[in-house]
Image (cartoon, rainbow, N blue to C red; front, side, top):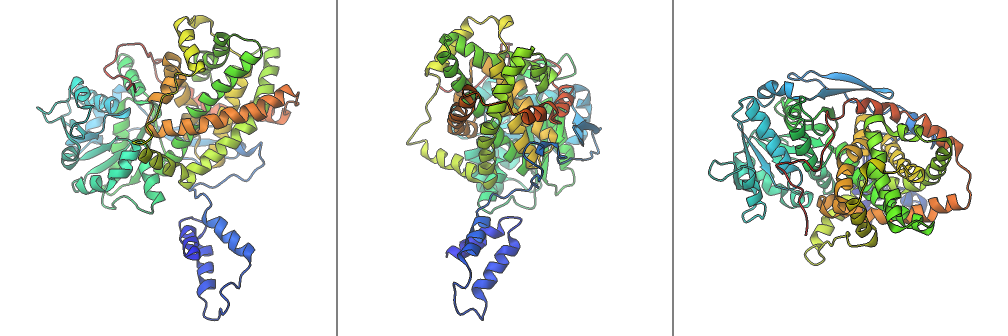
Length: 575
């Protein structure tokens, strides 16, 4: 049984087919009289290969510091509807489509054959995407019906009605009724619900309908159980690089400047009709995305689930907790410690990164502060990268997806609590209430720790072969243009407590790991006078990702998000 399972696992990896065949041949060869005629070492090697994380990417082979200098995967696509452009991101050329309200007249062609879109769910993304699509279609006189599908008795029913969806006009209904009638089924229910209901959803979809996703989690789950999507349907994904309220707020706030929104990746997993690419691009344009770049669903779920456990949520949570304690030990008051850690990140550092790039934070420091930054960066980079590499391996292997599924099954017995009652976040409430927005400090040590972690996150993705567009969006843009503005507005703890179940599970699992490893390895190295790693600093200064970030900054939303402006979508607050 053990050998049979090893062979099965080997066949699931792209490099294990030959090893599986050889092992099976050894076990079944007619001249083999002694079943154990191969060495323990050979068995262990086969077993290790069987359980190794599988990946669609080719790992880098250069040395540790210069790995990120190798060319990243380049993505190229064409469209029969939208004009594509080539952009130079570091040493690669990638194809994108720039969005804008001036492209709305092309939407009828992109959505040709689509009469009804079923938006299934009412979580973070669904309210924003449904309203953006409805508004964009109305602006150019399209008669595509956008309908919301919910469970009978859903607590979100009244919320959907409050934004103009109604049973009376057929734009609000029971989820499977909506699925059966829709030409494009946008499946925006929780990841755990997708995993539980996918067979019923596939069975309910009518022939010729397209399955639309905004996250690759379902593919990751199907991969983990050796299943796949039905072969007779188009499967596409449009994945905004930000939380749903950001998607809606920027769409509303950019109406007078040819549109604004959140950048989105798109992927075409199955294209039976031959029209999947243009439909995906039309979806992104209708959402208001400033630009769209190509990915694959596997690449998306690996980078996305990894990213939210890293600098997007889990890592910044751990960094703030560790620095808050450290600064108090150095004599700061709790309020000052929070200001120099959390406020410095969400109210100063990320604002510079958003408009000028990562290296601009370092370049604006004076000579003394640069030394402090270098100490913090040099000490923090490898400890942070150790955890980040572990996270990526756990996601790529399917372990992290299984963690989410298992956690979901435990919640009835062990409900997920909130974290905002601890000292760090209680003090944060007081600081925000008395904040002087124009005088938030740039703490050089905080910047060194935060940016070291951000750069380490980029390097892990680059070493795994992800394209620069995905690396920059998942590690930088989503952090500085979507999540951190909300953290600044309501707090890091608020984001952790009120994000998606998948993100919440990951943040709560990995934030303590970042906290502990920085405390145990990085800060002790600084305190013990460990010399700055000059090669590491030089690698940071010369890193090619800076050019990619600078280019992406040119494509950022046309307005800065306002978290306090009036909006038709609300953050879902868990009491």
